[in-house]
Image (cartoon, rainbow, N blue to C red; front, side):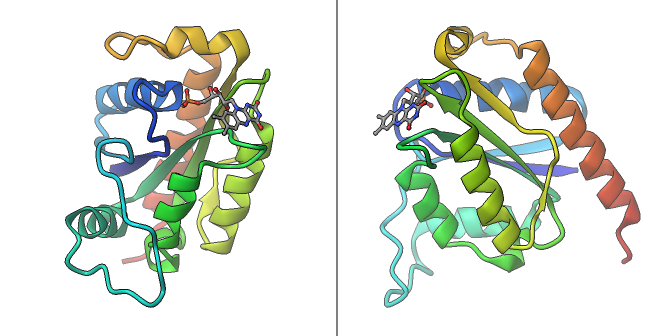
Length: 180
Ligand SMILES: Cc1cc2nc3c(=O)[nH]c(=O)nc-3n(C[C@H](O)[C@H](O)[C@H](O)COP(=O)(O)O)c2cc1C
């Protein structure tokens, strides 16, 4: 199973990205093939419907990975009760071809206790793209973020572990049900 994770922050050592990297290690131990698209490492140009980005290496990679994905994880810092600008911009390059019928797990990191607003916004975008929202989602907030401040060895907390397991279960059910 191919899982593509988009880390939606351009902040160095973003807790949302460190959380996603810990999730990637856990998914690999579950035998999933994982690709991380980190918007801090690969900044994308501003999307414009008037321009063709076909020769942009980052846009090409995002497009290819997302077409091949069996499941998708979207992670965002909560900014002004919503998702980050860089994640929204990346999603504007994508469409139903990349999302339709695929399970999507939403993940956020917030200054407040929990980042529900950004998770709701992400799920609305996923619904518009005809992705299948995982009923579980993962949010870290407030002091809980301390666990995800060290890039090298952050381990998932029990709540994140539970959200990830629900996502993997949904992804396996959908891939078993796929008619080829
Ligand atoms: C521009 C901006 C807007 C923010 N807005 C919110 C917000 O609406 N609610 C909230 O709980 N935290 C807010 N925060 C705090 C971030 O969500 C918090 O620092 C989060 O952990 C950032 O994620 P990161 O570690 O992945 O960068 C905001 C931070 C910034 C820079």
